[in-house]
Amino acid sequence: MPANAFSAAAHRMTLTDLPIGAAGRVCELSGHAEFCQRLREMGVCESVVIEKISGRGTLLCQLCNARIALSDRAARHIVVEIMQGEKRWKG
Image (cartoon, rainbow, N blue to C red; front, side, top):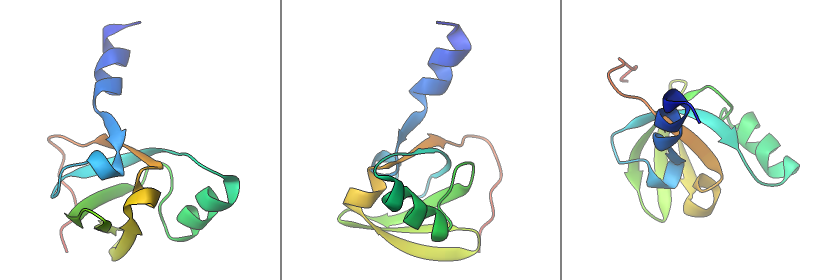
């Protein structure tokens, strides 16, 4: 495995594990096709930047100029790559 591939994989985590106040780029949605489609309809799709604002049982997140609430169960199906050193929108 190339060193870059290991480095990129090390920064991937579920949205549940993303620290509060951090932003991540959505890499993958897992689960049933209907569930993934519902997430996409809400704006949670691959390559979108999502910021975790607060939460444990229910997560409050910001993406695309909107705030959404996601259950912890739903957030476990969203794989993000943590963003470091990049500016992101603050609203």
